[in-house]
Length: 136
Image 1: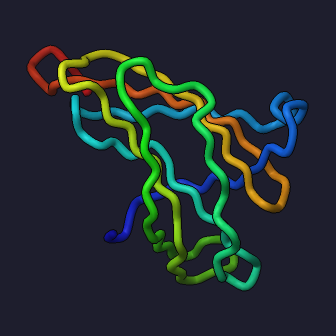
Image 2: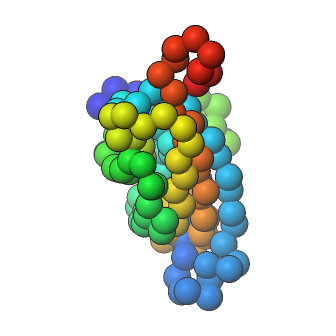
């Protein structure tokens, strides 16, 4: 897979109680019906600029009008923390709506990292055709 634009989300949820203690992030994405829309990318960069174990990602609340898939990829970055240039493995999450869907859909992902950090990601996706009067 070619280099992907990514956002870092470092995290983990060891117990149900931790769900309430996890950091919550809200994000939004836009796209067209029945096309893959990147909604997240997840890496684990160590202090020596190498990759650590990748996180566990769980679909806590599925979207009502589409599906979420996770693919393996590589993330390239420059000037990330103390790392001047790096290429590390990544998990990349994609949303794909039903072919005839136009509107807003939402999902929640739980992301767990081996280091014990956790994040709940609430992602809203706006789907439009790009036709006049319909902004995407």
